[in-house]
Structures are given as C-alpha cells and as structure tokens.
Image (tube, rainbow, N blue to C red; front, side, top):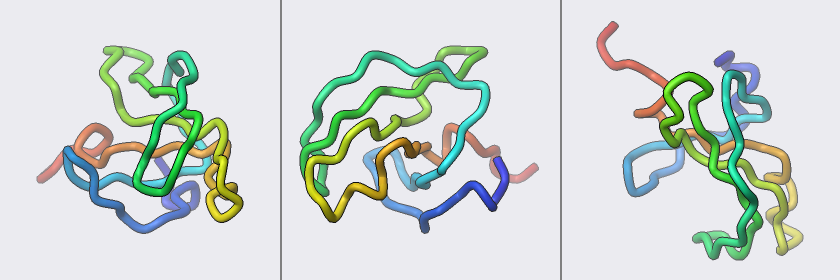
Length: 87
C-alpha cells in the first residue's frame, strides 16, 4: 500500500495498530452489518485477503454520527495483517 493512500495515523485495536486507508487492493468484502465501535454506530463490512481469505480489517460503509462521516468508504486495516516486520 502506498503511503499516499493512508489517511490516518495509527489507531490501537485489540490486535495492535491499524490504519485508515482511502483505497485497498486484492481484497474481498464481506456482508454489511451494524457495529457499535468506540466512535459510535457504523455500518461496516469485514475485509479479507483476496488470496488467503484472512480478515484484514473492515470497510466503513456508513457512519451515523456527523463527525464520523469522513470514514465512509474507507478501510481500517490492521498493521500486523498487511506488513511484515524485519524484512
């Protein structure tokens, strides 16, 4: 992923850091569902690796709070799932 596609500083999630991206490639998107996240209610869809089908994060389909609308159509991807350490 290009740094130009990354639009947010790291966020801390259960499995470590994650980043907000405007674009993602080689992914498969699962069904949409409503989730109560730390920033409020969102409609999201899990995002899977197009090759191995491992969950990489999710895509924000809808944000119900006005302050969170900037996330719509963007992806949260966990760093540990998209980057190898110590190459």
